[in-house]
Length: 268
Ligand code: NAD
Image (cartoon, rainbow, N blue to C red):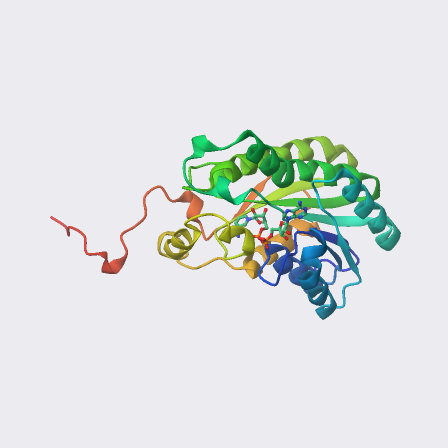
């Protein structure tokens, strides 16, 4: 059953075939949506364009979300191409590399500004620019991570950006509901992507994840794509302001069970 037939979707954050945005683009396409993708700028075009061509997507546009003019331009292009938009996906994050390792208290004012601007504020900017062309019933979504709530080593300023992004998601949901627009976030478990590689020690975190999470499995971009289809579709038409965890249940665990081969003290 195709859940997104007749819906127009614009997805921000395709860097390569490992991007969560790409997993979402593929899932939306499979479910019959007219999909458009946006990439950060010239450097990213090399990879984004062939991916788009592989699915026959014709809306493939640059947008550096740190620039208001780029945001305005991409919304105008979306209007010209789609007329109206039903789904907008924000799968964008950036912080200078030096801010994603070492002591959190060393975070500089400038790195804080850049991380919050690109990874959090941009969701407000995109929502505002697209609002005039959003169809009632439209669904917006952002991508967050558990470090917004609990301390994860080295995630540092990006955790602060994710906390802001989650609250922006709620505030946009509160604000845009009167326009019939829903706004939600997906909180994904660790996935090996370009952005994740920028976080010092990510590999270790990723390795242990499948041992600790209740479902004992790694998270894939296809897993996130499936959840995004639900949030984009009319099946979730009364869901707004929520954080949907796609993490195999990791966020409910307080203390991990010993793995069977870990030894342990035994019973009485
Ligand atoms: P990715 O590197 O594939 O995607 C990040 C995207 O942000 C890239 O396409 C990059 O070009 C884009 N970007 C950076 N600066 C930009 C700018 N100025 N303007 C426009 N775009 C810009 O990595 P990803 O893991 O797919 O990240 C997508 C989202 O998912 C991010 O918000 C990330 O924080 C979130 N997320 C990732 C994980 C994970 O483990 N990979 C887990 C939870 C949430």
